[in-house]
Length: 416
Ligand code: HMG
Picture 1 (spheres, rainbow, N blue to C red):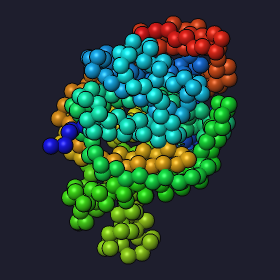
Picture 2 (picture 1 turned 90 degrees about the vertical axis):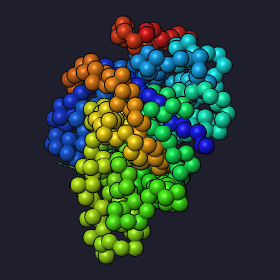
Picture 3 (picture 1 turned 135 degrees about the horizontal axis):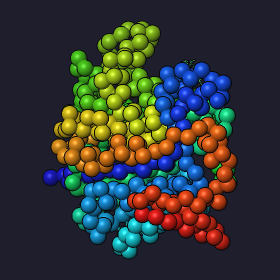
Picture 4 (picture 1 turned 135 degrees about the vertical axis):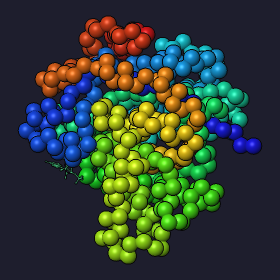
């Protein structure tokens, strides 16, 4: 019998401050509806230099271990997915390993491919366990990033930051993965990038949306072909994508999930051989509000309040989805679409576990978000302008880590 492998539990860490997106719009002289209705945002996480990708990753991983009572002696792999690393050589995984005092006999590394790096890490962990190479041990996969485009740029309202830690094991209480069905699509494009030495990302915004949709179509069709071979979906009165209970997307901003969902439906409508006859009618059917409400909308609660978290965005959507309705989804198959600029997209699926609601209750996501402080746009701008290597002397909240200082290019962390 094939091993059951997947995500056993998750934990979320976010910066302790946020700005209200309408405050940001007003400060920029923009109609707030552009950011709320046009992009789907509500709040945007704001970090200070003490809350870097390492401290957020370590906080999420420590939280996961503490909340779920993880036996760290059973961990054999730690992968950190990130595109906002802090060193060209030393991986964030080694910092997290040290801060959490994890066992020496572990494989540790970072995985980078824009927002796709977390999914690449997750698949490495899943396939390590499924192959038997893990010999019964579990893996920790942490997606951590700070999305930073710069003040007064078009990307500014889509900034954010945070980390999601995933425990991957043979006890997939949250999501048992359909190993081997994944569809992937790669293209060499310059849609979003951050040359070495730059703090802010560069982006060809509208082109990046086209690249995302194009890569996604290839990945989805690849998954659909394999899922059909396995009899998991079929051409029916319901489209193949409608046979998934929910579909979660990479969420650079919430409206993107709506565009992505319409694209998945368009793939089905174009390939079905039946349905609307004209391209205009197919476009209309692809944009179905009812389908979006039923399959996507409930996954976006956390993303709308945090912003883009690059590698972690899809997993924040998973957290949001299961936070909203884990019990109702138990035993049902969902689809997940990861996209990283540059580019690579991967579509995969899994079945929500019977214990998902119990696991999510322990993640206590309401408290994680409620503890944050709303700051003014002036304070956000002050934090953005602080030098990255001089963190303010703020005591870490209990259970969290902060960058304390950088001395002779070595980073020192305090907390937890
Ligand atoms: P923009 O050009 O300022 O905005 O930047 P716009 O003019 O395209 O307007 C945005 C939406 O608001 C439009 O809706 C407008 O109609 C609407 P749409 O036509 O798209 O449905 N709008 C309004 N709605 C209501 N009331 C109003 C109003 N005004 C306008 N008054 C853009 C938008 C997303 C391009 C920009 O924010 C940006 O560059 N963001 C960063 C890039 C990005 O997020 N790309 C997404 C795909 S690539 C990706 O996901 C990878 C990534 O995560 C990185 C990685 O992989 O590492 C980014």
